[in-house]
Length: 349
Image (cartoon, rainbow, N blue to C red; front, side, top):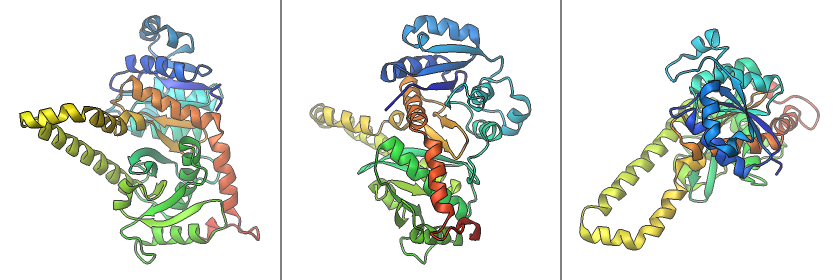
């Protein structure tokens, strides 16, 4: 994979920015030595940090931004007054063609609002969606939407399926990912009209997509499919339920291993296995949610992540940019937009 790309980074976005951002660039520079970065933020602070991280300094250019978007700022407020913020200027660099993509750990709502306003959506996509990765028994699964669209119609779900399938192929390297729609049951007759109509389109249409059908909540951890499609309300609740359950079991495990000397002794023997478990479930490995459907690569890092997590988010952006993600989305939409006789399919939904 070629990593000879330029990314724009919102250096002031995130709980631990800009230190975390610069340290993350230093890690990413070792993985992707051909990549280059435009750092948008406080020039004085960034200059001082880059002096301490020579590896990052060699691949970065600083672009001064006098303002920064805070976690409490409303998206509407940022749209009105945030044109000089590090977030807006980083996104604008993608719009102007200076960078192939943008990565930010800043305010999610503001990032989506500004990115949609500045970059616009890919032709044929009604709404962008947030896609992310999470661990399963079989490896990793892509799920979308994770909160950008609370209410979705059948068109939206079909578009999410296409974008999620392409995302899975490029990021996870799966040749023919399986796609499922999250529902209250696996039977074809269950669910609301939106999921049933989307199911019918994906099942019957002649396209290069391996459609599994409906999946349930229990299928998420099992990894039944490679791509899980749902509306933003359900996806956000499901993701946070999975995260909360993982934290609960981690708490229970720590509590159990420390309640007696026998348990502590058992921990010594199982330490290496427990370390592997911790590494597999480490949320930093899955950091980097992609805003799919925009005319430009936009990756959202978790706001509370550290340098390693931010470096992984940079890796996601590089993967998508270097492999022409948006071009592949357009190709798949072209397959969907026409039946074998050349008549449009989605317009009937």
